[in-house]
Amino acid sequence: MLSIHNLVKIYPGPVNALQGVSLNIGEGLFGLLGPNGAGKSTLMNTLAGLLEPTSGSVTLDGADIVKDPRIVRRQLGYLPQDFGFFPDLTGLRMLELMLKLKGVDGPGGRRKIAEALLERVNLSRAAKRKVSGYSGGMRQRLGLAQAIAGNPRLVIVDEPTAGLDPEERHRFYRLLAELAKNRIILLSTHIVEDVATLCPRMGVIQSGRVVADTSPSAARAAIDGHMFEGFIPDDQLDEFARNHMMTSAILSEGSTNRVRVHAPAGTGAPAGFVVSPATLEDAYLVLIRSARATENAAAANAGVAA
Ligand code: ADP
Image (cartoon, rainbow, N blue to C red; front, top):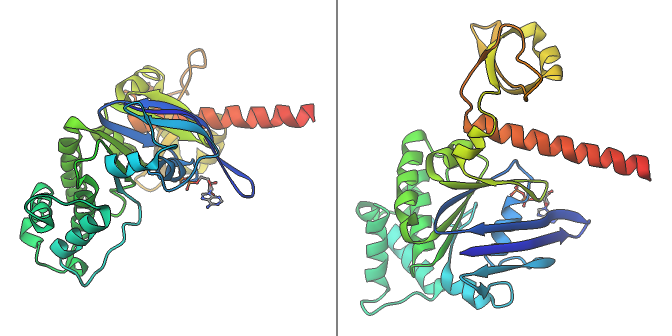
């Protein structure tokens, strides 16, 4: 179990990037969703021991990883957002080098371990090819191979599918799901589909605060029956958006929009709209907008009080 308790990170400025994050994360895939600037990378970097928190604690299976970063080094695999490459090396050489840097070795030597890892991420056939010729998906799988080297208990992957085409993305999904069978995988992303596909548990973070710790099905169930779909002409869309909580508007035939709105209990659906099953994207946007509305109200109150 990874237990994050009241984690705070204040950058110089000051920027309150994490404002008391608490989460308990068990084995399997946990998705951390949040818009840009929410604090996801700050949280990932803190868990990876690359950033010192201002306050708070993090334990992995009971051991304090903030106080003793050596635990993280042994027990953690990390695939950062900008995973560095040495383009002139082959995949195999690159992985051997990463193993050396990580201090991973075994009876058969690093080459044997690197070969087995490449097999695990389905890159054996590209082992002798230069990394510069790898596709985005192959690079991410190589990144994952180094992250799981040494069989860590906790693997952190930060925005892993950005820039991958649909086929590569699904291949990466399958691999992640397989690897999550006996470890904790923390997947940070702003792509809701990643979480809907992969994660039995999820957290939503906004302005450095956890605004939901739930499952995709519970998040959807919370707004089910309150999502409606209908059509709004293009020239009325701005006005409509000011008066409704819209979760999507897709232009249709050039002049009208297929619109989805959330109408909380008691407010009723817009005229001509019909109820529609909630998606995780709807649930996520409703959570983020509600959190923003609460923040704005608190800021306005603070303004009045001052
Ligand atoms: P996310 O990964 O969700 O996009 P980040 O963790 O990168 O969010 O950023 C959270 C907040 O902290 C943002 O307001 C960002 O501008 C700020 N921030 C991130 N890194 C630094 C830094 N080194 N110094 C100052 N502010 C930072």
